[in-house]
Amino acid sequence: MQVMPDPAGSRFVWVSDFLPDERAGTMEPLIEAGWRALKTSLERRDI
Image (cartoon, rainbow, N blue to C red; front, side, top):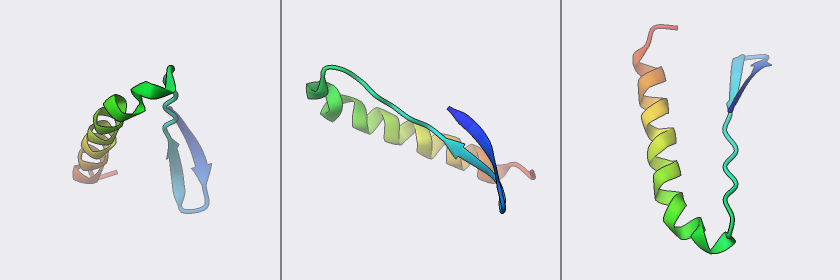
C-alpha cells in the first residue's frame, strides 16, 4: 500500500500479488472486501 501525491489530493495504491496463480480465485473476494471496507471508512471521515 502506498499513498502518493496527486493533483486532486492523494492517490492510494494497493497492489496484491499472490502465488501460486491458482489461488487468485480464492483471494479475489477477500481483496475486494478489503478495498470496499477501506473505501467506506475513508468516505465516512471528514478529511
